[in-house]
Image 1 (cartoon, helix red, strand yellow):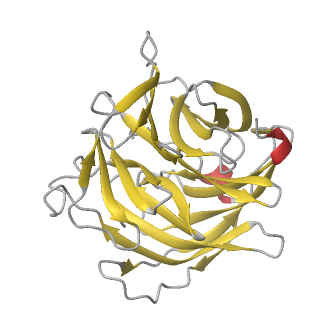
Image 2 (cartoon, rainbow, N blue to C red):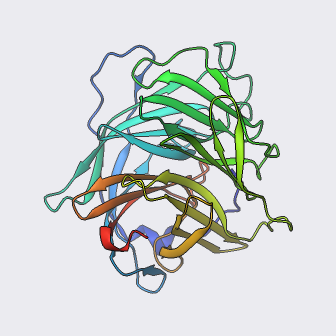
Length: 324
């Protein structure tokens, strides 16, 4: 994750949010999980001019997640879906779950049952520092195994079944990515293992024992202001991958876009672009799910616990005929 400078979006975007409601609390009793409260506001795409949706792509609702300053719900850096639940990691080493809620038209309209727990270091204890717990990506395998990618010190760790997490994760093979902000950023489970992408470029397919380069990092390192892949998930139809990219240029130019990635790691046409003056933020996570019309994509932003940014979860439907 890259600490972005404060972006003055508050006045422009505040009017685009609906009335907030406190999320319905989680009432379960699973070990290690703690209920958390948050205000949830519905959001639109904001004023016209900054949103471009490709043919067959439509907005399918969105919410803003609001929590007090310093709360552990800030810093959400990636998400996947499991049985109708959002599953997210934070850049402080926490795992978050919540139930997606929809309106009468099937559009994303809320979150309920939010809860949170610590991920643990290799010895089963708490991470010794925030940088050690900098979880930037996650994948959920077909067998229900939770795999988390860490950026500052590159690691891929399996925590076992999502519903029966182990306190001592197992180390998996990790791509040869640099430590720090150009390192391991996007992760998804595929039919034969994991696909990983570094923020500085490069794509790898990984099993538990080895990672194979699919596309090399660029010969010229990416500049801070270049487009960078920050989240990824497999197309539920098995036809490649979807990715979200982020661009930030000081002082105010923050953008996101969604594209496809083919098996060779090549990126396809842009499906959606978000930029000012419309709704946008520091989007770092993406999840894909089968939907009646084709595929529903969810993108998640990391607000860095910065009052001038927002934690947004937006949904887009991609018609089956234009998935390629």
